[in-house]
Length: 298
Image (cartoon, rainbow, N blue to C red; front, side, top):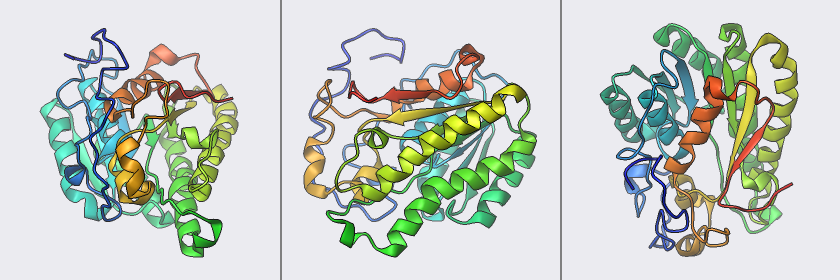
């Protein structure tokens, strides 16, 4: 596999068997501790100038899907600001180094998107550091599996809602004054919005909210030339899964339920975000683009 444009069999593009052990990483989970390591496109993503001169803010951009998107955006010509938790500094610095290796500006802005004040300051700092803003990717998320509803504490439910839904509201609202015609907002949903797992009641609920929020906002902002769309990943191998997102005993078979028979890699998500951020998708508004290995949804 030389780059994302290489034709091959999607079933065998990545190993069907992750060879994943029963990991139980500390939350939020570092990409550097994930076994096997996820593919973020570090050695495979080839840019073609599709985002030249653009300025992007990506939440959860230190690892996993967000990290892959940051790498892809930079190689397509965009400067990138990354939001991440302070304890993820080592992962964030690695992504920043890859962004800068592509010849683009990387801005690191640590903090917790579950805090309204941080979210508003995040947008202000990113806009100032980048000299503007025209791509917003709301990707940060919290996912903690619990076998029963009784095991979901009030604190977990609140933190999941604040991280996955409230942050999207706070950040997007703060960003709107900076977004002009041609700007794009891309939110991250999940297959869980359509086919929720019994042990992810709170997380799945937030992903359905993200879809609806995005479709409503897309209609509101379309007349201003600002496009809002969503990417809904399926089972993607990231630190989120190995730090409580899935039961440790489920990790060795993670993703095998898809028609492709394997988990996806973050590198396979990045092109979807690039497409929705680029002018190629100028007539795509309020869409949820499912990247899930063929799992059916409404």
